[in-house]
Image (cartoon, rainbow, N blue to C red; front, side, top):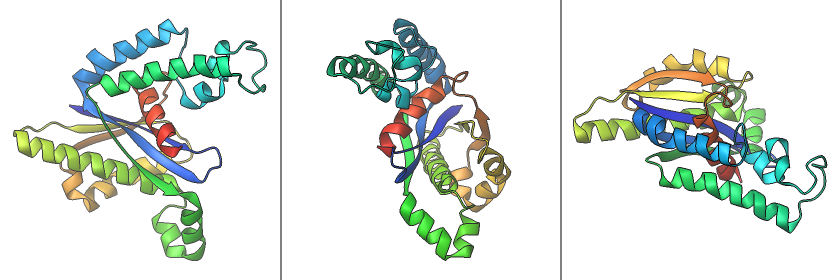
Length: 216
């Protein structure tokens, strides 16, 4: 079985909306990356990894500040260096793992202009950039697995695990069957689409890192 963990993000000015994640064999996730990820979390005394908090020195990452109680203070060069060390550790885990990144980005200004001017487009796009980015990401992942299966003579099933988002997850799950019907080549080996909490499903934190950096 192949698992794709997916998260969404946007840049600090909300100019860009991104959905991205990683594709990998379930055994590689479970036996390679996840234990290494948990080891790194323990090493840095973290319950979870979240890119935005690592960048800003907030939440779990306030501990790397000189004064963890003052998260509004600008980061000093020493604090930035400590946070950069942590970030590089987790980035390196992704780079060294047997996983492949995939994602899609939308410029929110263009998306808003289109949906405001064209009611039909707004309806098709569900009024939120998440859907076009999520579907493009799933389509690319599906095409990749389809090509790999045909080249190897295998029949690995592709499942999607996405970060829980109450604003969009219900509608996305409801439209998943329709998406597969309209994209038969991508959907040939698709299995399930599920939404989970990234604090419990740690491999969603891996997707968080790619989505955050892609949006930047």
